[in-house]
Image (cartoon, rainbow, N blue to C red):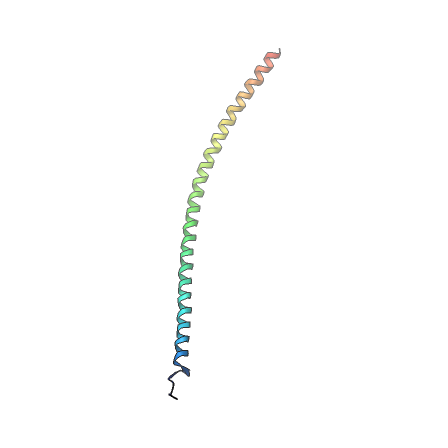
Length: 91
């Protein structure tokens, strides 16, 4: 029998397997950290976009409210005119 080389009480094949496992684990951990960082950047960008669009939506909503108020006034004036016409027509 030939003597087997040992590293830290393990055979060479066991040491290589353990090193491969550790390297694989570290590689996966680094990949996950990179993905988490990308997600955080995306979330930050989405928050900024949301705030920007929220301000734009407020402006648009205010414009729509003003238009709606003026249209409602016009409609009420027309209804009043019709009511006056109908009252005067019955006399």
